Image (tube, rainbow, N blue to C red; front, side):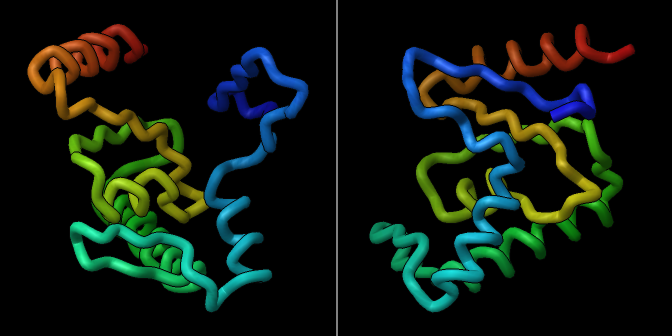
Length: 124
């Protein structure tokens, strides 16, 4: 984690963080368990194996790149508990590596205003 864009926060635990991008970990898990279920969202009737989840995450990563999102950019997602939330969280393209900001549903206006304020202060 030397690129200056990653955060490392470790709470009171003897178990260290994995120290790698979350998609890298997902992809490695998918190579071992490709046909096992990775995500089930009953209220959507959604099921995906690890292989399918990786494919969807890669598709989102490519889509973000096509829309001009670059490494270091911030992407906000405003979503309830849905499969799409998980896919965006794991967006899978090494060139994107954007920071995903989750905007809570229970405090919509406040969360959106705060995220916007933080983004404005973070710009060079």
